[in-house]
Length: 341
Ligand code: NAD
Ligand code: UDP
Ligand code: UDP
Image (tube, rainbow, N blue to C red; front, side):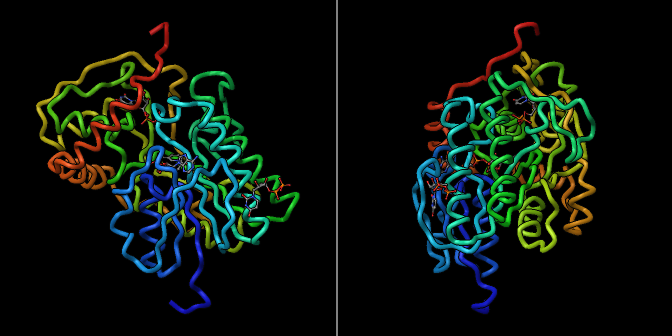
């Protein structure tokens, strides 16, 4: 890559699910990539294949502490994303979202870097507007078990907007909707990883509630395309951009699809619904379509098939399954449930 277009890019949370795919893509594009992670939920396995690349570096660091490096762009992804992970140490989750954002914004301000925030559809909470557009302010419980994540991410958005208004920073805010694919943590409790692991192990698929709640799932490769397009966009609008796949499915549908794709004999079992579990979620991606000339390309069937291949290989590899077992033992599950269900 020509020196002029080769950038020094910091990816926080780079050893996680999305972060590792992003690092891989940026390294392949020829950029100098610095991955910063404290391995709270990410693993070295996710980035082991990049360690020999001359344009990739890894630093163990917690973003709640200041970081002094010289970079041109920052993708701020550091934060546990699955409910069981972010509820494991909720105070740390809020610190990561808020102190982490302040530190990365302070760094961007000092070095004049462009900075991208991995925000979330959770800022809409248990949405009363459907599908969700960027101008919807959301319906979030500020004191429930999901609040550390939802409010942490909302506050981070506030900080990004204020650093833009007050200090003229060049920011990007992506409101990411549910994303799945290879390198999701097998024990993260998210619905796709849970159902695939359960189906492959012949265990019952645990549908929470009656399974009629919905989500819209985006395959990871499509999401990473959108991240890079958003970062590279010249005319950024004054606010966040929804990124996701608008194809909406119920949890019961997705359980049945996964049973079919895996050819599993697993039954479906119903369990209580977690507290404050959002009822419906579907992104309105008109803004992303228009600004980024982007829309998801991978069908749910193809994306699930690739995810199933990944988890199958993981289960067959003795070392990876040891890793999963070690992690599973260190996180509490399940999440708190509705008392009235
Ligand atoms: P993940 O848990 O796989 O990755 C998060 C990474 O951040 C991990 O590698 C973890 O070790 C690291 N991390 C956590 N706290 C840290 C800290 N204090 N300092 C340094 N590193 C820290 O989750 P993911 O799915 O890859 O999510 C990445 C980002 O995207 C998160 O910010 C998440 O909120 C956001 N997001 C993801 C989704 C999704 O569906 N995957 C949806 C919405 C938003
Ligand atoms: N910071 C950092 N790296 C830098 C510059 C700043 O981690 O290169 C952190 C530092 O902890 C600081 C925070 O970012 O407190 C916010 O920086 P800012 O300049 O906005 O405010 P300050 O607190 O320094 O007045
Ligand atoms: N879910 C489920 N069974 C599981 C895990 C999750 O039915 O084993 C449901 C969960 O209650 C929620 C949906 O699947 O309604 C998506 O959950 P996930 O944790 O993946 O993401 P989020 O709730 O943050 O969108």
